[in-house]
Image 1 (cartoon, rainbow, N blue to C red):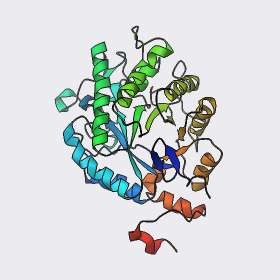
Image 2 (cartoon, rainbow, N blue to C red):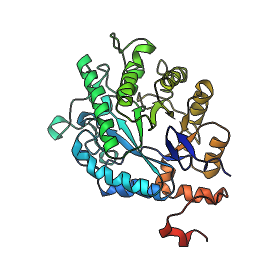
Image 3 (tube, rainbow, N blue to C red):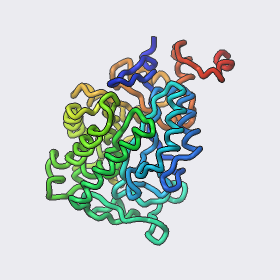
Image 4 (cartoon, helix red, strand yellow):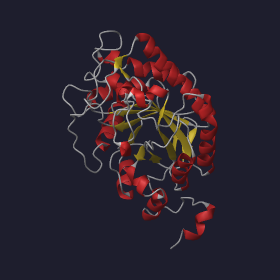
Length: 356
């Protein structure tokens, strides 16, 4: 029996294995709508055997999009196509999850293959917002500092998005509080220089995340898991640290959060990140060790042996993979074969190819 292919139960949801598809922006939507690309992209990873398939960062409001091409869930009209996606994922034995996001000061940019440039108002861009009027870099828009009323609207947007996600058939939600987007901007003193109840102390800087968490838990079924993705460190002096991430995880554990998805970076352009195979796994391991919170490991995990070792040694409870699953949508099926696990079900339509 392999550890990677052991089931994981969180609340009343059982994942058939410990491989999850990480949220990966596809920049393929018009007005936030999912389409055939999303059905095939996400559906093929479910066919490939992943236990959990998470959508890309899905904007809770139009101004919360990274780009005009982002997936969204800010209106009821978005629901029907998403229902088609979740129905297909669940029919393959996987669990469909949605990451809810607001891009904050990193919003209103073109998609990467369109140059990753600021979208001006004349071309359909919008005013970006942040905890403080500090831009990400000179290439990004100057944000307006959110008022208290604006903060409350953000919380409401997340809550309403959670209701729509439930109606669309998702069984897992992940709050995106990483990668320099709005919630992360509130967490880090490098981007949050407020002097009100949302800035300054650790308790104040985590307030928005806690209020969003509470608002979502108030409408999200108790039997369904809630994840939070964090950047465990800003990789920059004076920024959010692993120590603060450990503190936050301990708080979230008492706020009905079930798993911390442990990424890093993205807050400031001058961050110095040491990138290499498994480079973020120690964050998941440390947070799990210190708090007992279940964690997901990410970051250049590319082989079956690496993924198996992470789970087998208790470094994380879930392996959340991105680029390797872009290269190989059927990685779980191939990994099961490599690790000698014969209990991995293949789709009936593909059984003729199971044995070489």
